[in-house]
Length: 480
Image (cartoon, rainbow, N blue to C red; front, side, top):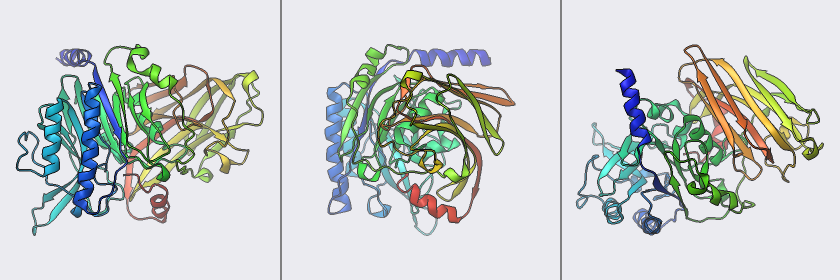
């Protein structure tokens, strides 16, 4: 019976049609009143939707806090949202009616993030949520997801339930911003749900060397073998921006990464079967002009004093090394082209096994990476390179074999000096009931590498207040 179910799931997934996705990176405008703020941003949304229809888009995804901006007071901006299945919005808030009508008029799916208000059960209190809503191509509300893992949103209540919806081109799961760093829902939404595609609405604040927006997005898609539609809010001067459409093999079909305030959209055909990159948008990606990002705020979150370091001798023809920290060990095989190695350029191996603070939660994390450094001082590692590094790697492979831990998950992480991932990589996991083997490697030569390695997120969490929380609140402010 189990074999039959697996076969039927395979048939369902392989037979979904290709579709055209649109992702909007929106720079919110602030009106003189909360109502006018929503109204002005809604006008821009409708314009972007009309443009997307011109590209025959089947689904349009908008970012977290796009309609309201990063709001501290939800009571001024929140809307009541009806139940899933509602198709008549004539008695609902005007923005909901407008979005429903627009989805129906252009026959496409819309994913929009809204602050939601719900009447509480005690003393007439009102509860506020950070909520993604999905309108089907007939205008019906088909999904509602309340963000589970809030970050610096003290007036909001965390959601409790997963949310998915099924179209004729795939089954989609919904996650929002900080959710991507937590087992629930980033992994649970993929378990026994038939999800083939994930929508990631975010107001992500990027930090070197391990939490840059595109870096995190590619790692999620590649590790989980799902298509990802990632829509980020746009505020480059605050380190916010970086949106993408990523295929399930980790191929970035299109991306946005700009250093000036703007609203822009990307479009790509997301294929369920084809690996013809020319047809999937990869040709567009290869020829896109890389911006210098001079005005994109670069921030760093790297507690280098807590990490183990090992220097690399790039003059060696073939480097095989391991590195450990607090019982966590991993291995590297590195080959650099000798005629393209700059002796003044410094790379080191790093490893970490410990805890950090996400909001008011202490969580376990592990890293195992090669990182670029400005000099031999470890404090210079993991920062943005002042000039591109010329060292070209023919091979970088990082791997480890570890005991399986409850709710622990693994992601590849990679970044170049232009704040994009290293492209052309493969990621593998081999899991038994006792151990898991993970490997990540490049498949084509790579240069200007800032970091390349593995991120492990432990399921062990504890709650409370710590002095370390103060540091993280400063470092990760804006990670909604």
